[in-house]
Amino acid sequence: MGPTGSASVSAKPLARVVAVAACVVVVAGCAHKAPPPLYMWESFPKLQYDALLRSGITPVEQIAAMEAHADKARASGAALPPGFRAHLGMLKLASGDADQARQLWQAEQAAFPESTAYMDQLLKRLDAPKKKESSG
Image 1 (cartoon, rainbow, N blue to C red):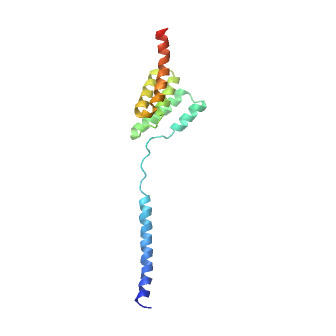
Image 2: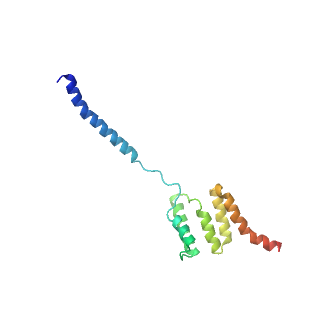
């Protein structure tokens, strides 16, 4: 074999080393830590589902679970998901706390301006009995 034959033999191990190194770099690049989720969802979807099913959990128990979720989110610096304040407001209204419901719906509207139409509709319904009383 001439010089070209020996060069091709040494090039094969070098090519393998380069290929393995490239694979290691690609895998290491994929192993970086994923960004944190935008919102802290955790048990919120299940709480909503349970409320819709009326599975025997009282509004007071649901409120306690949701407030614990909100406290955990605040402690970790995470944002509450869309609809969280609106749902908690509905639970507050169901338990007789219309003022807190109003505050939560206004907070939902401030956090998610795209909810304005729905939150305005809920706030109008909340104010409707007051208007009937004052005009009657």
